[in-house]
Image (tube, rainbow, N blue to C red; front, side, top):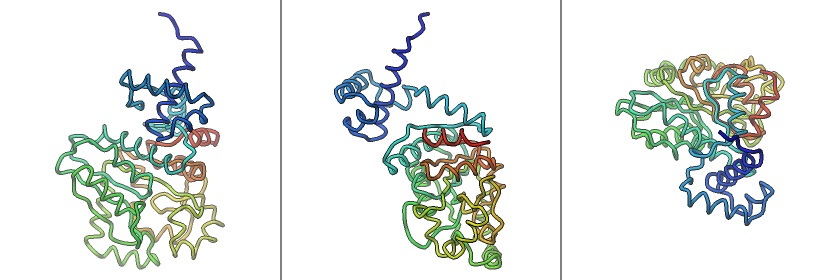
Length: 319
């Protein structure tokens, strides 16, 4: 068997990346050429060849070697059962879309034909997962929002994301109809006296699959716009918070900050997240690297979907 030359391997990788950026990343041929440092004519020839050979579904038929290596290293470093690394894109929305779609593709193979409960977090990245959810689950399956919601509608709100996932799968949806953060620990306890809310919270813990994202503490994060978080932002920052997952603020070592906000969350506990048979963190972008590392360091999830840039940053940090 003749081993491929370095030039052949390099050519295959350029072809795979060009096709991925064009068909999956939604970039123009001009943008692809600039991104890869090749001519537009070469990009045009690659796209034509890929179409002619029936390889339009690039994510299935062409492997990105460097991504495969990063996936293996992430699994080993953080004790993950699975990892998917997509190419880094300069457009933040396109990056969220590709990560979300990859996450949807990942869980597709885990839910087909089964009686299964699927827990959903919040964030725009997760809203894109519906594009790849083609599996047909049992009619007895269900979706549940893993956390309370916010008072304004958006495609990042838990209610909207969970509804979209349930509609895509054709199953019923259960909502934790309470705010993400209660005004006090006592008010949270009072809400839990409502049997329906208590039942849904219990359902979050028995869900077989959890699909979540995480947030940083910058202005671009939806959690920092909440009034209760604004009121206590300086306090949680001084306590070392680097981000949040399911509304719980984490320090760099993955432990929750000792603040009442973490006691007043209406969401599935992180300890329950650790026990899930399948728990997927789908997130990317350099601004989220610290928060993602905290989630991984805390061993809250067993699968990861992210982009190449963040994957390298995560691997540079101590496990």
